[in-house]
Image (cartoon, rainbow, N blue to C red):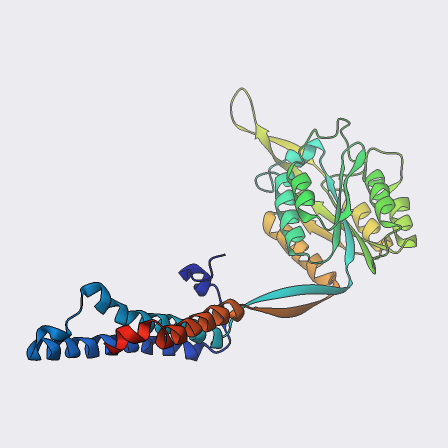
Length: 337
């Protein structure tokens, strides 16, 4: 690092910044020395040429003044106390373990949520993840089967990458295995030491696959102290689902959410059921869950300061000693002649 570069000096914070105003006075010493020398030269020229010296010798008169000025600059910088502070954050308390269980069945391509049910859920779930601090979050994807893609972790980038990669057809077996999805999420959360353990399940249909009954899975969640939030996606009835390949006109399919079962699951898991029939409603759902489940995380900030005045003080004293040496040794003859 170049201690004397403008970039280095600009990067500092100063304990006594007003002392830097003294730097404006430093050029006055060389200027005064030059004016005195010029006046003396004019007097010598006026009364006779005997006092004239060669130019190189006359220039030596200014060396001590320049050395002293540089010494003053460095000593002023040192006294102004250049510093670089750094902050350290320490988080204390306990966070929440949250597993998102997201339906990736074929019906999640329906377009009553924009651009599709799945894409809307992914985007808003990503914002939910980005708002969390200190919590561990995991991800379960399910259709006819369920798989834990990410165990509860604080590596939010890993979670977000997996969340964005979800798409219909990711799981070969189609269907809606809600009970199996809850079982996989419970298995990831049941041994967690977190003060709160949460499962957020998003689906748009009724359970028609899997070997574990959804209500039994919700009761298991309650037994393990896991709170369950269920979110029903989309509208019932005929909804847009792509376009006809022949005519290009919108194609409609009939869909139905088993809202009764979704409510029962939330009640059995000491949580709440939410219905999201459009993007705005889904956004409000995630905001509500974010408010309901707050982490007990306390952040402490520690500020440490590193001083950088020593190099400037050292160089300033060295140049001051050099100035004293020049004043008392071989420069004396030059100055006195």
